Length: 379
Ligand SMILES: [Zn+2]
Image: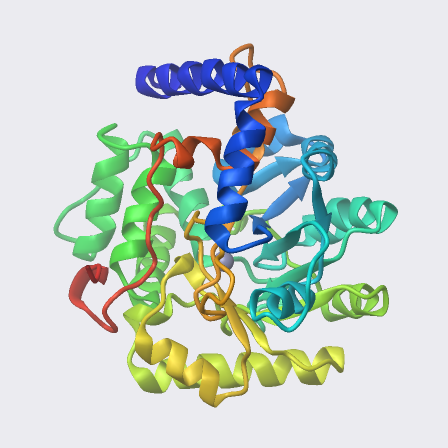
């Protein structure tokens, strides 16, 4: 781990301890509640819940992983911090003033429909009676395909492992740029990938995958073994147990990078496929990469959606816009304290937003210009 990260972690751990033991955490929570206009509505977001975290960490994007054990502890921690678990629909009713909540609410959400969630997350939720919503990339469910982000991560790691040198004149410019950034050690792979996905449309991601496969292949190992998705039978089983599903485009497309015809198709067809396969009504959406625009919101409303979640780590306000719902994205290291083990104090402080209330952390906002070059931000 880098030095800055270590210092930041030490500061957070120390602050968490002081806040927790002085009772200041509760005061901050009360202040947050007042700021939100009544009850707090916390939406947490996970990607993959895994059985073997250490093993998976060797081959997967770290920020998508949480162990089953830590996941269970998060749910227990949320409960202990005074949150009541709620379906998204009930939370939307409270936010809109259609219903009154007795306690602060927490909605559990999963992006991407990874099969790990079915295998290791769903049993914990079921056992603890916690509702959840999973946002599905509809066209990928049941196909055996992998996400572009997981494929890129896997291929660049293969290139790294083979001591590969990028050949600048034979590969598309974005491919050499990505390889060069990572192989030169200027950025860690997951950070470089975040930038890359934030900059280029899906078409470029697919071209990059093809270019890397051509250089590295042929090999049966080009497709990552991990990162498989649920199939429709698994989705239907969860529906039968009362779990909710929303749409997350057809093929995991960052909509603000795409022309409006593509946005329209991704929104309309993802909803239709999930409704047909799972026999449910789909009215909730999750923006890929957390990015949205006024145009994307208009398309969602026109297609019968009632809400959409971002990855903006801020409080949801009473009467707030249901198409820019704020979420806290969580993974294993969110809870790792100074000693490298699970820290309950740190977890609870993070969940209670102590650090942002004290100005120790600024959220990343998701609003973008539609189709702007290089994913420019709107300020
Ligand atoms: Zn996603």
